[in-house]
Length: 233
Image (cartoon, rainbow, N blue to C red; front, side, top):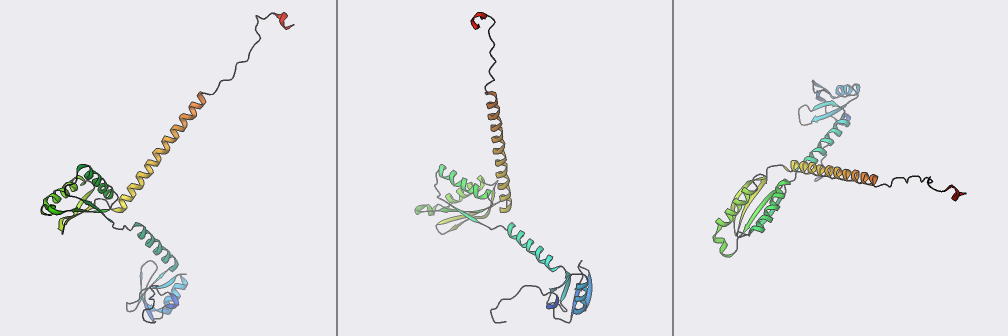
């Protein structure tokens, strides 16, 4: 193979196994022992299975009798499930000033709460300007206050520390990203079910109201007995 060429990770099976003998493992994991590759291939054919080299660097190589197609399919399914459950660590960032007013603080805190509920980490940065740089305790107290306000959702993963003109703290969520996604999905489904129930109730009320307002059939008019018979004559 040329330098820099593709290195195959595909397992060698059946006739592609060229060694003289192998350490054979049965389909249920039982040890058969060291046998010639030819005998191992015969056993595989008789069992309608494949001979698969699972440990090529062993001496002799270890081979197993298995259904290779089924083995590849199950491995692909496991890899797909692992990718689906994989959580990417996302770090959100929120910047504050040491003398932030109450309204802005509540707004910023709301964003931090939303990030933590979603299972994301949050990097909090206090930005000092001018003379504020000589009052780092203002930033430290603000970060402490924020950490206490959201302690039900997150914890201090990285304690406040000075970084040039800034002071930084990292909050980590109590719940993992996957858990947060499942909870958000469940909450969304619950809200959808509630909306459907309300709509069904409103529809039933409208139907009942329409039925109640239907015009009753007119009563058949009878000829008045008081009329003079001669009038009709």
